[in-house]
Image (cartoon, helix red, strand yellow):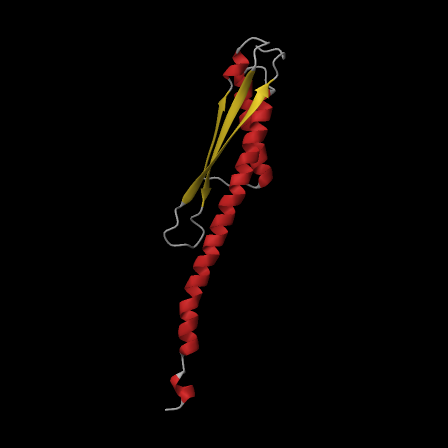
Length: 142
């Protein structure tokens, strides 16, 4: 039997072994990149929401402003979430003018990963960020 005849089909076997590994690595890179980009977008959304909420005059206005600004920032960044939550703590706006305070906003996004072809990968990863902004001490409040 010749050496060339003995190696026949070796390339096909090597290809069959390498392709799943390459596909798995590609899926891990895509999933990791999607999660990393979503983390940055959620942090930006939380910061924008906190800044906007701190400019409101009432706690209800702060909650609405935070939700609107977080959604706008997420849309601008192209963020895709399976579940979206904006939690705003705006009790500082209920106090009288002259008292220092801060508004705190937490944004949670569940990043879908089911379309990434990695067996055993979770269907979604939760990304959360919190930001706060100081309320102007002498600004009128209601």
